[in-house]
Image (tube, rainbow, N blue to C red; front, side, top):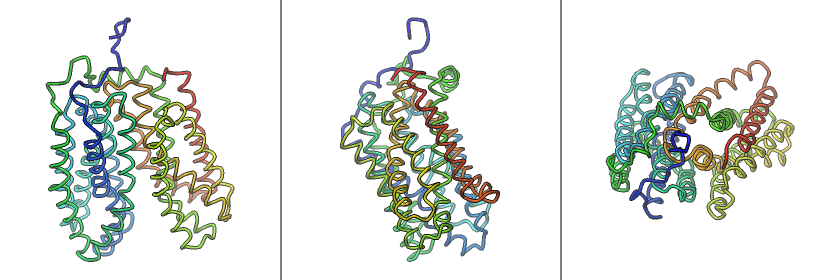
Length: 407
């Protein structure tokens, strides 16, 4: 407790819960498998599924949107469970549940069965992806968390690079249903047992009372903290930009007359550039100081969008945008993990992170559709102008944290 009787939101990590570099790399490797199975596999299987079942593109894409919304809504609850020492149960069950839902997806011939599978996969996403992993690491490692977050995001960053081509190859050999069964087996036989083993030290009884912050109490406490709202605005702004560009960058470049092979190359370069950004932080961890890193990234995002808005069809300027965007996008994931702990405290990290992720996740899920609607009204010039405004608002929010909370 603080001297004035309020809950101390900067508690120390749970004693006896830390684990070595090997365990951290193991948990990071499981992020690669979870992201590849529960997120990126959809990109590889959407078109084969659409062709086989005769569904419209919108009907197929709705499945992923459903999953993202469910994941966002469940993030605070999942984070609270991890805060209470249930990280092992959460992540192990998430891998097993995801496996079952991949099997359900593989046998679906009806849209509603497929959507039901993606409701379950949204739950699995909330239980296994970065938010859950970050909460487990923060609870275990305390001040030593940032390097572990960097390792986790470094390996997780390879998920699309590995699983999109691998899943496409499996689909070509076994069909999209067979590919899903292989992914289900990997999660049930590899991911679930390894989560259970790596997190075997988690014990609910080991959580001290002063280190547990109930979800409702966390929400009420955070509502009174200006830094909480600043972080919500900053990360929601990033999610809007990322969600829009992920699905609209390739048609935007095509609209500007960029050759198809160059468009594909530019889009494909974003993944390796994200990894390059994360690797840079891993090699120079002092650069991950939350306030300095956040101010830098939010400012560079504004510059990158301004370059894209003004570049027209100039290949050099477009390449500059891709380089800036890819590198800072990789770093932004790390920023989210370290900034929440730095500005809001580590106690109850999962609950706090989950509350912020709910808003960011909903923004991410809605932004592709919103950007498409805006394109109908005024083309990509209007879309980019609005995204630039969103990025400026996000940067202003993060820069104001220096006056709102101590680091």
